Length: 253
Image (cartoon, rainbow, N blue to C red; front, side, top):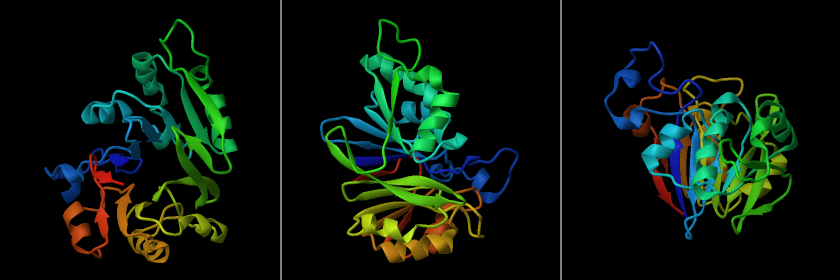
């Protein structure tokens, strides 16, 4: 398998509108972050997408994406959901219905706000053709076992996901003790890292590093970063087993 970071940015993206800080004016592509999302490409070419950011179309063009076989939603805040309509193109190209997976409240939100996307296949493919599934225990997607891991995003419970020995954990502020059972023997961890200073609904750099130390993954990648974190400055401050994620980074699993 291979994981590709589609977007490593926070809800505002980087450059941030109207900002002239060193990160925002940088010409280094690793400082240009679209909204947070990733895709896992299986050996047979099938693609599992994690979240549909508002930048999905741009990300898909950049990465030459031609299919999406399933979507795992971590939660339904706008920066992780509002690219859902762009799934239409993959339904059209492959003439297939795409399954979506998440926790009950997230699926309910999608049904309420984007109900037009939840429809059975027909002769018309002018809208997304999606099917929503509530998952609360390990399940299978495209022949791969996926474990939903409850984590806290401020006061709301959302999902991290484990796929084989990969864990994808964005928008986390705390991990319930009962969730650590799913975080053992992890090879690759992608983890939220919003900014240097504390935030009520996201871990900061120091908090992210503390979670990395406890989980003990072999390779760790920081994601969901604001423009306050400049790529080179942050990378220089990190231990050898932690790297700063960036749009387009590919990880062999």
